[in-house]
Amino acid sequence: MKFTLSKSDNIGILASTLCMLHCIATPFLFIVQTCSTSCCNATPTWWQWIDYIFLTISFFAVYHSTKNTSNTIIKPALWVNWLALFIVILNEKTQLINLHETIKYIVALILVGLHLYNQKYCQCKNDKCCTKHG
Image 1 (cartoon, rainbow, N blue to C red):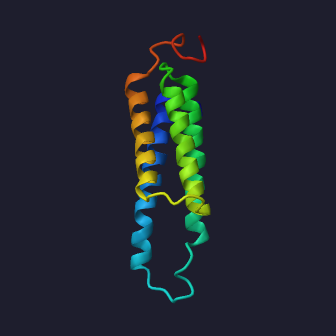
Image 2 (cartoon, one colour):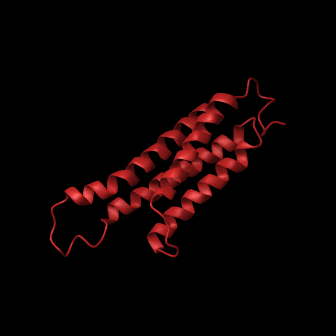
Image 3 (cartoon, rainbow, N blue to C red):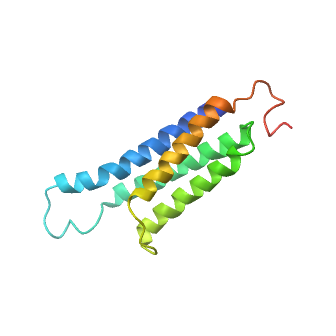
């Protein structure tokens, strides 16, 4: 299956949106969950791994989108926001810096917006406009 600009942006939009929903759903799952005092202190391991799955998917979406975009400003914007999302999620796991909860939502939303913008305005009309060709 060959990735095109549109497909990689769609995957990036989907992955970033699902990541944001995953982050939003986490507190509600623990509020609703009936558990003993021994299991409430830690997030289940399978739930934590979902963050890394979304990061991996979004990495490849950003990679393919930046490889084929016709807009040179979108390239660093996508990478900077992906890196910011990576750092925010890594920080959430390690608690190095106390960041407000909404930062990860903002970064994920910006990544969705960049993919949407790239999909709508940065389409190559022919093979010569893509940065990989010229």
